[in-house]
Structures are given as structure tokens and as C-alpha cells.
Image (cartoon, rainbow, N blue to C red; front, side, top):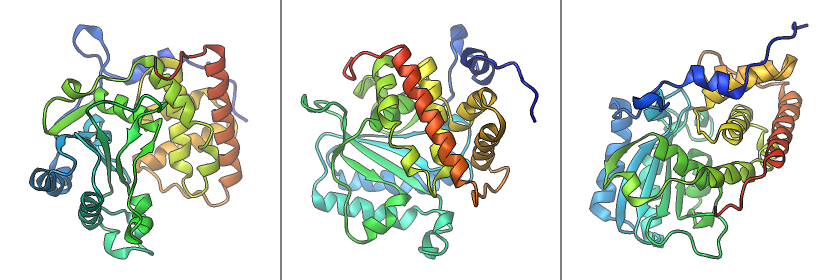
Length: 304
């Protein structure tokens, strides 16, 4: 049995994990991409320049590639801004390109030809005009991710959809990104307000526990990051979020979150065989904790 420990506050832990920038403000650096990333984004940038799908405004690299190095299963995260929604042929051509350069080592059995490649996640957003007034959340115009490979190979192209997760994505990209094509991101899109980020984080939470089977690591780390965002208004890397939340847990719950973090960092092979019931229980507890936290300090409406 673990002895009771002092539980640091979110602010205590966050203060030790993020470096300070000029004037004492904490920031996450955004270095230029390295060779592995360049090998993936080069064909994408070339395609966007040549074909100009949707009237490309800009392309931006964000996520772990610019905040602390790619982990073994990390996506290369790309944000594409366009002037209009992509046409059907433009979607198909972009998907065809991404199917040929992206992959994931978890595809070894079903899609072995793609198992040696690093995954790319590309999100498209129409930059001009913002979300329609009747939409609560922004409209995601295009999406490619390796979890969609089977659907995409079957010809089911990604379609525009309202998505609160896009608010979190935009906040992440504004916090640290590298411009691959086009103007600075801040010149095109205003960062989401802290209130809107908080509301979006809460909006994506209820569905996560039901999605955990087969995606235990990602769901637990995402919920940990939601808790940090709700408490601090900040977006932090998933491993940082787990490091902040783990000391607030006890027993097997802490062990599971630390396993998820270690798997993300690549220091262990996180085998979840036999651990699903505990992971589901922890996911539900973290989601309930997020809801209670939000209710104790209600956020303004999502459009605030």
C-alpha cells in the first residue's frame, strides 16, 4: 500500500514543467522541423503549392514535432487553412497523397505496406468568414488520420463537420507552431479565448470513456490534458499533463496513468491486456472529475 503523499497543486507542478520565456512568461518553444518531418511534409507542401486545393492560405506544423520531439507513435500534425471548402476531387487527391506517405506501425497486420511510415494528421479549416453563425463550434473542412485509413481506402472521403476539438487544436497550434507555407498563423486566425478553450475541452470529455477500448493510452492522456486545461486554461503536451495529474491519483489509477505516459514516451511497451476494466474506470473517474471542476467554476457560453 502506498503511503499518503503531499499532493502538489496544478500550479505547483505546471511551474516546474514549462520553461520561462522573455519577461518571465512560460512558453513552449517551436523549433524548425527536422529531417524525418521534412521528408513527410515536403510532398504535402509541394502538392498544396501546385494544386492549390481550396485556395490555400497557409500550412502550419504544430504538436509534438515542435514542442519537444516526436514520440514513437506521435503524429506529424499539420493545419491547413484555405479560402473555401475543398471540392470532391480536391479531397480525393489530397487523401491519395497522404495514404502514400503516411502510415503507422500498428498497421503491420492489416496494412503492412504502411507500417514502416510515421503517421500524418492533417486538419483543414476555411480561414475566411469563420464558422457559420448557427454553428456552436468551428467547422472542420478536411481531416486525414491513420485511424481513418480503412474508410479512406474504401472511398469514404472526409466531409465538413462541426467539431469542438478544433478549438483545442487551434489553441495548441497558436501556442507553438512552425510556418511551412503562408503568413504567420496569428495574422490569419485569432487564438481561441480561454473561456472558449475551456468550454471545448469540457465538450469533448463525455464521449472519451466510451472510446477507450483499443485506444487506452491516448484516451487517458487526453483526459489528463483536459483536466489541466480546465484548471489552468493552458494546453500542455500529453506527457506533461500525465505528470501533473498522476500525483493526484492513488493506487492502480496512478499506475495506469503512469503506464500510459511511459508508453507515450516510448520507455516501455504499454501492453493493456487485462487492464481494460481499470482503464475504463479511471477514464470515467477523470471525466467525472472534469465535469465537477467545470460545474464548480462554470465557463461562459462557447462563443465567448
